[in-house]
Amino acid sequence: MTKLLNVLLAAAVASSSACTTSEDCGLNGDCVDKTCSCDPAWTGDTCTSLNLIPISAEAAEDGAYKHGTSTSWGANVAFCDEDNLYHMFVSEMKSNCTLSSWIPNSQITHATSKDISGPYEFRETLFDTFHHNPRLTFDAASGKYLLFMIGGDLDGTEDCSGIPDSDGELYDTRIVYSESASLNGPWTTPSEPLVERGAEDAWDYVVTNPSPIIHSDGTTYLYYRGTPKYWDDDSLLGELPESVGVAVAPHYSGPYTKPFSSPILSYMNEDPFAWFDPSRGYKMLTHGRDDPLNTHYAYSPDGLNWSSGSDVACNNTVTLDDGTIRVFKNRERPQIYFDKEGQP
Image 1 (tube, rainbow, N blue to C red):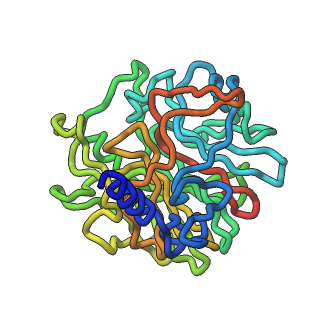
Image 2: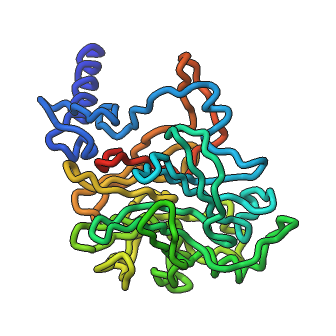
């Protein structure tokens, strides 16, 4: 009886992991004989885990960009044919402040390197305080690079102190963009806010952390992190309910409307990085909110109806090229580099 039970349990496990379509493989592989055959960048039974390559101990320790003793956060990188350099756009805290006072001390830095892995050298402060969480993309129709971000003109604090909750709440929910025909600039003055915040009792009273997908016809899906009103409610900070939503516009400049009144992922996530894979569908990496050590993955055939977002793409460990495992305190704000053919 025990042997029979073990056989039945094994059969149940095998049945639960068997695939029938590519969606069962996270839109990252093909279902072949009820087994997922993953694309090179993905691994796991359902092709929803990133197949990350090892890095050197030096790279793990030094990182790709250091500018004195300043704190940086959430880099985007693209290659430029004009100068054969990799261009990085990253949040950097002014006056050697840390992330604890990111509002109002974050600004957008432009840095370059001959190698994608760095080291990157500081070139300029592209947007002064307060601007944060840049997301770089390219619009093929206009031939322009776009930097989506949050923020607006706001003086930083030399002593790295915070600002009144009313100001923090206002600037945290300002999604704007700038554009340029070249990664070398010049860049336009950031736009007015693109996405209207929700009602004061809504799940997305704060709309922040933009990640756009621009389609060939101009239609733009702008994914964002939504949170309820929390700046003046310290009771929410420990368990802040952060979720991902979407706003849609006929053009990246707007006007944007929200097709749904609730989040698009049933699992709580933040810091979305969304992209469109022409051969597979829509994909998104996020920072898991219920388990903040993990990066999560979600997928969609149409960009509007998504999987739950509960799949774990990677955790807070990094494998070094000598086979050892480096454990980091956290892993947030996932970003992906795309080559000239648009492949990650």
